[in-house]
Image 1 (cartoon, rainbow, N blue to C red):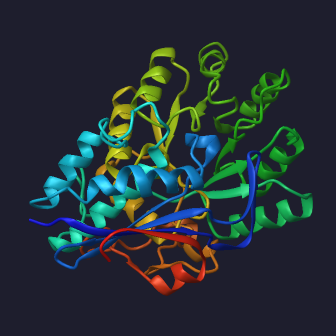
Image 2 (cartoon, rainbow, N blue to C red):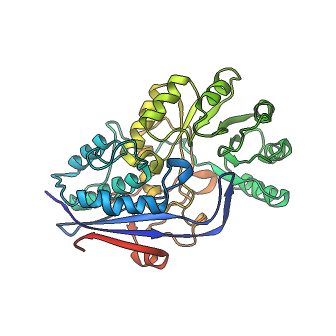
Image 3 (cartoon, one colour):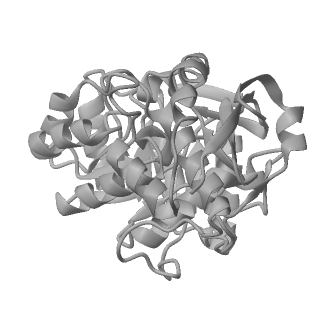
Length: 388
């Protein structure tokens, strides 16, 4: 039996090598929360999350406050008899805190993701077991799986140079971050540079809400665009359904999908052909796994996504998810120091040539070890709950 005795919560801003832009935000650093758990046996584990107001209606401030005052004090009273006991608890939570702690309608998925990963990592170390989920998890990654390149459109010269690098690096799947001003010429350039063998998807990040969106998407579909990710505002699910059913456009739900209820609504309305599953927005590894399984059962295509600025800790969680869910069409993640100046999780998990995933880690917990000196270097505030 093991119990948490203390938590340390940090707000961390990991700097990027270069700015990352899309229609909803421009970022030069991550806006992350890292959660450390220490058990009564002395085992240590970490969780990570990146709250986004436009995704789960949570900010770093709201998630930090919720964890410090409304979640972590309750966790100090928990006892676990093995890693399977932790997994059972997290399955029952399904991406949210117990209803007795926080009303389920309260935005909390990103905050709970830090708890989910932290408990798995800490008690994986406490019981000396690697975290594995799903009844039919494979010991190896799907052999054909490759990560996608993700590109922001900008000046033509920079855009063209980036596309050339992607082609030289052998990527077979590319996602373009577009906005309300992206024109057809940019997509033609991308198709011309990347070639017909490359799968091209567009992510509008809710930017296409005007009357020009539909004819634009019709034209782009003829240029071989395989998916239109979140063209509308998250609440415009009926419009997504119209685009998906009446126009037969391959709509991918992202910000409009975070939990079981939102997924059920999308399925009922037939509002999309695919969903983008992210560990953070779904409320952790266990909830993300169940959303993948439910999506596949509903006949949807599943892609695995990430928040911009994830460390290799969340990348390790994503790889564990990939072991459990084999039918993943596309994936984005494992950027590591391709994007981050400092990655606090070691070893650094980065995709390789042509998007090859990194090697799996086989140690206890989630796998990586956190360098607390790196965390401290980029910490803007810290709070402790319990005895550390």
